[in-house]
Image 1 (cartoon, rainbow, N blue to C red):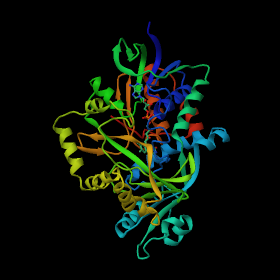
Image 2: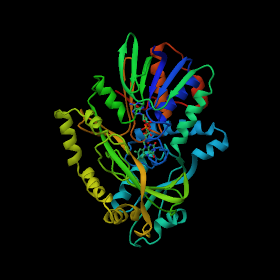
Image 3: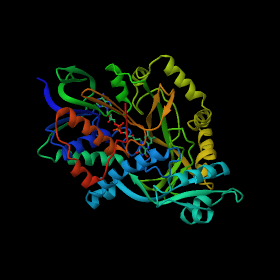
Length: 450
Ligand SMILES: Cc1cc2nc3c(=O)[nH]c(=O)nc-3n(C[C@H](O)[C@H](O)[C@H](O)COP(=O)(O)OP(=O)(O)OC[C@H]3O[C@@H](n4cnc5c(N)ncnc54)[C@H](O)[C@@H]3O)c2cc1C
């Protein structure tokens, strides 16, 4: 006997649970099932070990356009207000305010930063320019040991946040399960193999032989969402390029977040230095950039599935060629290839990255953070024949597939509300916009719907 639900969510990261929460709090949908293949929530990219723990607003991310910055800011505000609604003892475990800056360390970067500032200053009134003296006051180790002739400049804000997105994931699920009016089930250790159309809904089959029927199915499976979309025959000219990211640790040398100027058009962040929300005694530097042939970090056997997300046709091959031959990406990849090598890797990382942020660090001060880091499913748009920034949401009748590279954790609620609107329309259910806006604030459609 198949159990029947209004909505089946596949994937128990921050995307899946934020949708579960949004459904439970802001709709009259009656039943939801969340299926997660591992034995806990948030074991992959949403886990604090695996991402950079940054609530992105778009003010220190110099690779965002002003429009992307505006939408990212709106999305981040939703998560911030959600966090503010939690009891203080819970909130303090999962989000903390920190100062943040984006640092320019040569004339070219200073020029870029000046331009960025003039484009976004109205959107971010708390952001201000700072020269060497103020940088030294706020982050002494950024200036200590630096060549005196080197010009530096920063954009600084006191409104940065570090977030344990894994813990946020769990609060979403806990709060959804408290709603007595909603029949909400979460099943762990339940790997979804496929979803097939059945009548007006879908039959979802799992590796343990289970079958569930859902009137609407949402894939919140990170890198796997595009794999499922393609296996169901929905090819939207997208593929995923897996971009791995590792981190290095040092003892605590920074007070807040220090980002570097990122060249526009590159969708993954340059190496930055961050405090670690789970360990106040260390600073984390990263993420590095690698191209693993897998969809998940730390889980073998995803190579064939990764290959399954590619269309081996002219647009895809031409996209890959453009990516590999892009001079900025090529430079990043060449540098990063060295970082995973024993001995040399650490020295190179220090010289090119961590030492550019904290010049007084030596190779005895940093160590590779073992088991830390994830795989970003960067989206390749085969029509544009290049990588595109941010997340993608593929919609079909009764189905949504969410592909979630950074800043996917920041924008979870914004994505969830977009999903809920679609689901409510499809099921003829109610989405309580007024309550959502009253509690969390205005929401647009910041995700690209394809
Ligand atoms: C190195 C790095 C740094 C990042 N830094 C930031 C940052 O600072 N700020 C930010 O906002 N974002 C950041 N991100 C992005 C962010 O981590 C992700 O966008 C976000 O965690 C995605 O959440 P998710 O729930 O979609 O995916 P995930 O957390 O990966 O969860 C997907 C879930 O689906 C499950 N699943 C997969 N297949 C199946 C199946 N067949 N059946 C059942 N379950 C399945 C998985 O087990 C997993 O639990 C970073 C990512 C990386 C890799």
